[in-house]
Image (cartoon, rainbow, N blue to C red; front, side, top):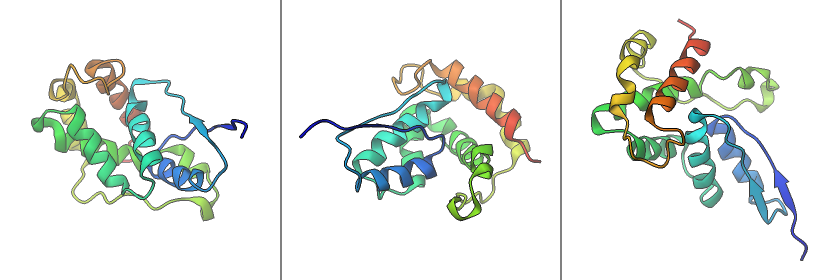
Length: 153
């Protein structure tokens, strides 16, 4: 059989999961992802996890990623930040209503507390993890930039 290559780009874990669920049924032998910024590390991790197990819960993949890259002292902060950002992508708003996926639960997440904790985020990340493609500082900086763009409070 000839190799068929499909190239897709997605920005959020909810949609990556849905994409991988569809790819299981597609005639692709190879799928490639494009990672272009430090914050995309979570998407790359999620894409690989969902490609192998497309029925995993988004929250489980997100929690697993956080445990891989954050010190215990920063796990709750990073998880809350990533959930908050996951739910506020303008790409989601550009989707037709019938294609939008439900937001992740945000019980107790307060943007003021997230913003106040951001200056210390890099200190709560593991410096030597290979999952943070450009290192802890760049990852923290891109999370901060994303929060600036997507704050709705």
